[in-house]
Image 1 (cartoon, rainbow, N blue to C red):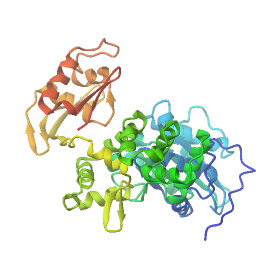
Image 2: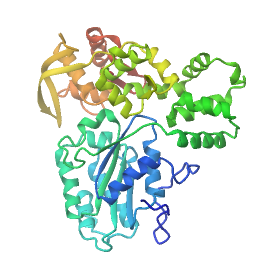
Image 3: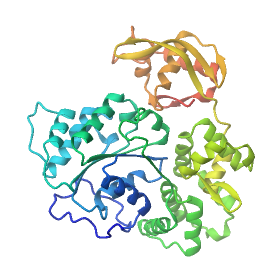
Image 4: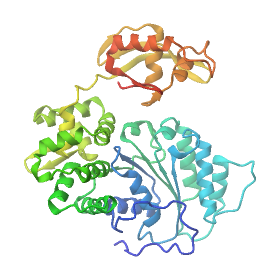
Length: 441
């Protein structure tokens, strides 16, 4: 049985990261926290996966500042990889971890010439002290950092846990990139924890916290409505609470379907639904659309299991449903999912440090789409990872022999985008004004 007394940190320096949502009780996300605590005690690393807005970041911050019952001293290093100067700088990540641990009095300063992995390695291999001491590296938003890493990084991280058996890692990312993280199961050995919506108790506590934040009084009926419409999704709960607090008309006079229509018209709520929707693959989106339209028999059993694991689908007596009527309505409003675009038999060349696709067959679903060589390059460039690419990045990939950093925007890029849209469909390339282009297939 885990003890309920918090760890005594009086002898440690001030926390390097302050948990901002102070309204949470000590048993916040108790099931998930207990799973992570048991992993730390067992000196096992964990990959934490959560859809956008599900509260994985809050969970990790809560872990490093208010964890209970670890049964010994623990030194956390916490970092949000998106906050690093360069989110792809792996050596910078090791430096940030070493800085935090040394700020807590661990190890002696090293020569300025030592940085990154070498510095962190020397720090943990020279540590002594209490055998119950734990070293835990907690890293949030690792999608870009680890998604672009090869097995060398995972072998290095694993080697450190072999050199110091008290070290483990808790890394958090989105499910979409899970298959690209630790593909050889070197570091996490398949140990993955999915974070879903808040349970009933935590949701009720979160509603109370929202009432305090907004300085309003949510009566019991409205509290039930908030819980039902948000489904315990922390991001949706926050956005819906703000929207309902501003609405002057008594909500008891508004039919739920009309209220949902009003909420989905708000950018803050539609944005959160879109973020979750865009994380799903074609099969998962299609399965949600079948469920939203009452066609359970047509839904993919494999996708239903995945959607249940990440909290978008729930089992209720006699039925399987989307976790909230608001998100269910959002799903019914979406256009049919895009068929996946793949490049089969890709051939690449190395130019200016980039592996550039110069040949291959473009497939839309199972059907080949004939494209010109430059169109193929554009598709390959935008498909490398799901993000917005600037015209400068695209030109450096598509025209590597002609483009120089700092050149003015190449007008050929816009023409290529138009041509690829004509080949694949207009919805496949999204224009993000003032930034660049994002591939949605």
